[in-house]
Length: 191
Image (tube, rainbow, N blue to C red; front, side, top):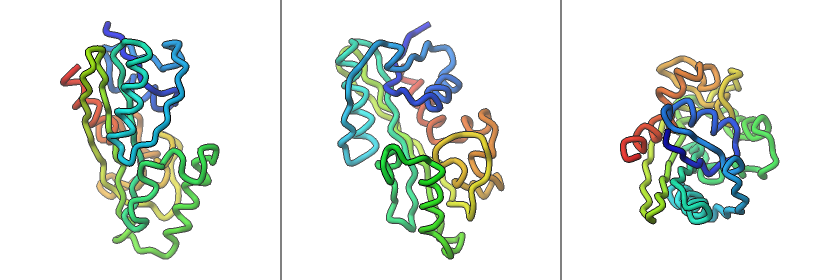
């Protein structure tokens, strides 16, 4: 089984990647014994994913996947965007982040609450080659949080065609249609 280091210690993200990329031995940077501080100072999801993947690949000499993903809310000029994890501070809980977004959209009709999850997966190969794949899932910001599954912004990301938020989907349903699921299936083709 081919071992791949995932440039993350986010347990929810690691779990999701392992569920989608079956047939590979996915390990976190902590499990790989890597202790590097990666400064995500890119201005795009692509730049941040590449920075993470290359930094960990250079430290290990191994094949590394890195994900940079986030929520873009059109009414908020695509905020929080590349700052999704650091929105309102890295140590701010997603319950608070979600409520702040809902408060900022208070009174805004559903028709203009469009949003998307964006995911870019970068694969850094030991020979120095880097490949990226981008995928999105379109939806809108719900009027209130709903659901206990998923993580991050899932409780406020509503899918009109499903009639529920991504936090109300089972892991299997979410992985089939999610931004991360789509991007990982694209990157799997080149692994």
